[in-house]
Image (cartoon, rainbow, N blue to C red; front, side):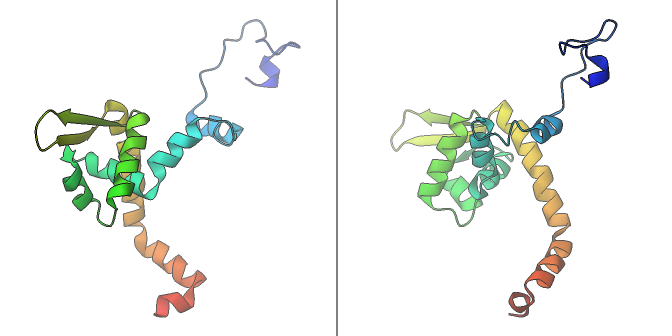
Length: 149
């Protein structure tokens, strides 16, 4: 609420309604996410880590068993994939379903929250891929020796 709309106590002046909730970008600008104590930092770290992003993108295509997902997310070790899945499951983004059979059969999929996060991550990934030529040009300007190799 602006100062003009607030009385001396900070309460709305007569005749003014409370403003709509602030959008996330505005709340972030004001410092929620920048606060060391903000619990959303951990979720951000999990969802935007290298493997977190790739797991969210991979699972946005459907349900996968561990080995299938590991093949899809090329380069990830079993340990890192396992840790990433556990963190994303604890954050409510990934669902783990275990079947009581021998050998064990476990499937992973996105929850409703995970689907929403996956959509946002997909937008960023698409933007990066579309803009990769521009990004590569910028990288070459900053690191000309590496680009020549």
